[in-house]
Image (cartoon, rainbow, N blue to C red; front, side, top):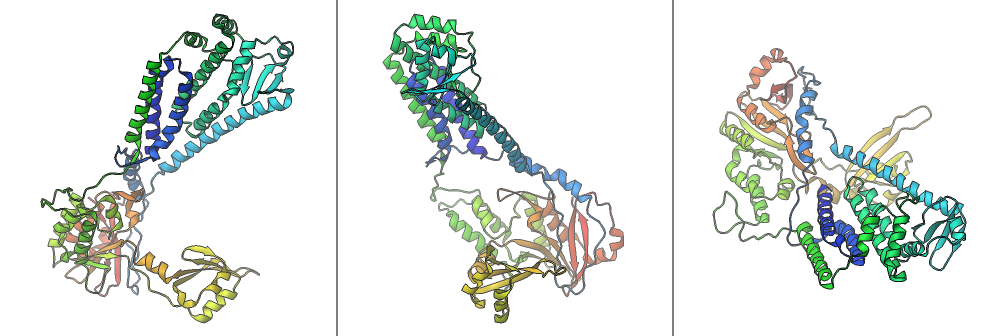
Amino acid sequence: MIEFIVKVSIALVIFYAFYRAFLAKESMFRFNRFFLIFALSFSLIVPFIQMPFGVQISENIFSEQTAALPSVEKERSQTEINAQPVTLDQEENEVHFQPPTVNTLNWNAIVLGIYLLGFIFFSIRFSFQLAQLIRLVRNNPTLKDNECTYVMLTDQTIPYTFLNYLFVEKESFQKNTIEKEILCHELTHIRQKHSWDILLVEFLKIVFWFNPLYLLYKQAVQLNHEFLADEAVNATFREKATYQWLLLNKTTGTQVSLSMSSPFNFSATKSRIIMMGKFSSPLKTNLLKSVSILIAAFLTVFLSSSQQFESTSFQSTPFQSTPFQSTPFQSSNEFEKLLSEGFKDGDQYELDLNKLDLYALREAYLALDENEKFTGTEFPFFDELAFDKMVELQQAYPEVKTSILYERSPEKKEIKKEVFEQWKKTKNISLTIDDIEKEVSELKNYQPEDFAMFLVRETEKKGFLKKAAYNVSLMTHEYFHGKFFKAVKKIERVQAEYPSSHKVQVGYRRNNIVEIDGKITKTVPENFEATIFHQLRIVDPAELIASMRNSMQDNRHPSLIIAILSNEGRGVTVMRLPIK
């Protein structure tokens, strides 16, 4: 959205600068009207035009601010976490814990809220002005003519128009004392449908209320309307000097303040009188029209939604000097192949760090494009400090045996036929199939074996004369496979095993990562990944357990949560280690 606004503003500025510098000084009013409306419309369309080349405008104006906030929030949230070690259930075979979350200020919501407030305010303002005009038409006598409908007002006012309505003072109109030049001027606004131009600009002012450029365009459009109407008056009566004196004599008249109408506007009398004496040669006007076309063509190339041209034959990376480079697809395959060599036999969810060629893996990772880095198997430990600490941890083998544990897919659950039939008859349940809410009656279209997994949970407690309510969530085999097997593998924990047979696990989940538009921008706390590898290399679980009572410390500083397990895989304790 920011890229769109920037591109629109660039187009508006360039068009307006050209208009003010050249076109506004020439008596080519019909072309100027077309140019201004074209500029407003074209600026909204050009960012969506697809071109094979162009200029990319970064959209990270708010990203850096959002990414910088967690460092402040992080220290605040750390003080709220109890530092006391927690003893785990000895019967549990897995340790489940939640790393501390980081609350960030939602700038997107704040900006959206401010925009909506402005949008609502200017919409109400527009509606109020429109209602005023409608009320004038309804509450005053009208007279239909071939070209317009006269609205006769009791208040003393200079004539003005809106759409097909010409607002005049009733007494002057009935006595026929309104100058014919003025009526001709206002009728020209109606004949040439100038009100529609104003309505377009008003609509854009509401949608883009924060952009002052639309105010400049409205002034330019309205002034050019006056030039067009003056041109029509002079062409009809051919008494230019008399009309100019009439304009000067009427400058003190009472004018309407409604921004959507086309009043007989004398605020720009000097400009209008000057323009009446202007004459533009055909050669000059044709030249300016040609330049206008060139500007539009330039902006089409410069501001279009460009698609970068990619050549698979001449790409290069800092790690490859061979004449034949791999395509992005081959780079992705190479990275996944190198990573797969580290998985333990028969277990695609546990990666043995000692089996990996880390330098080759880093080379393959850096050859990936941004999309491939976020759609492949998760292994994002390639910033300089984290990579160095990971190499040191790998070199500590066999004293420290390190594994990367990925999130495992759940086991399939078979639905008993009698349970399935009971669901069909039960009224106090809601149904979800493949994460989409369905009517319970749709179960008749399925068989129990159509589903790979089910989950039943209570949604309302049983009360007095009230039955409990439940939700039944079902997954078909195809959906289950796509969600848990085709999905990107995410790291759940990093584990290290020591000579004492103890294992230390550190949670590595998405709530340790700040994401903007689906992309990782920062880990929280800072040096989180490097600290994991460093602490796993130097920690002594047996010593930590023995000195657990002495590990109580001030928790105002960032810390790393670790879980220590026995050699049977049962939990012993959870504690914190400082992050440096």
